[in-house]
View (cartoon, rainbow, N blue to C red):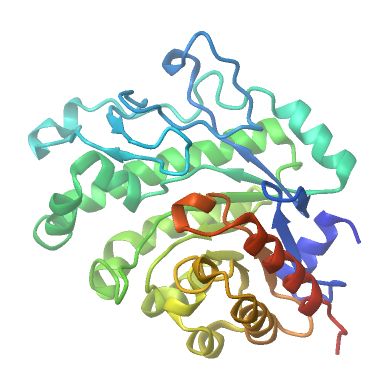
Length: 343
């Protein structure tokens, strides 16, 4: 099997030879090629060359195309920084806000070369368009105000969620037009959990946000793309909702936080997980026994004999206080326990 075939078999539970792997930054071992939505031509550093093959984040002190001012004390890129202004600080200003154009010129520069390279290597292509709805919403509105507005101004928040979903739908449509079926997956992010629960009540998530995710994910499926979603924190209460919405791959970096057994009971065999060895409670210890035990447990409880798991790295080692050696050991343990026998 090549990488594309292996990932598709894990997603569809059709009996791959092993779990998928994505350790491309640490060891150049990957069944996946990730490409990235770019800032448009009119919001670029004229001295830099841009390609979908390299993720672009605003440098500290820069505004992105959404009007968000970013600051970070980390020049290595392991900390994406934080937004320090509030572009939409008053609902009275919402009608004056200029929503970015998802089909603006330059968003997919270098796409043909990236797709040709991925096809030559037989890889599964994921298009990363981050900050799907909730994350971008609180970047624009401010975190505390967003949470309060979910409870006190639900109609306004719902309208904003629609506009943000419209942007992602436009990205998917343009990717489908330019990619002509060669982009296999729409890949996005929205962190929903704290260490102990959701940031908003589950019923509010279902009322305001779930319909907009459905619009976005349905468009991706309509365009022939799988859906990969990254979300961190204790998201157990809405995991069934993501399954219902048709998420094909769910990326989780903290398996111990959500509970390996609890998640297994909810979702084993219903969704393909993309899982790292826990970046909070396991990898930072450097304990090889714990890393091996967790890799084995994930392969047994989140995968099935017919697929359902992609083992992944966490690329920002210093941010979580771990070493390259620990990450490489995680890769070896995923290889050791991730071979399928079939049923």
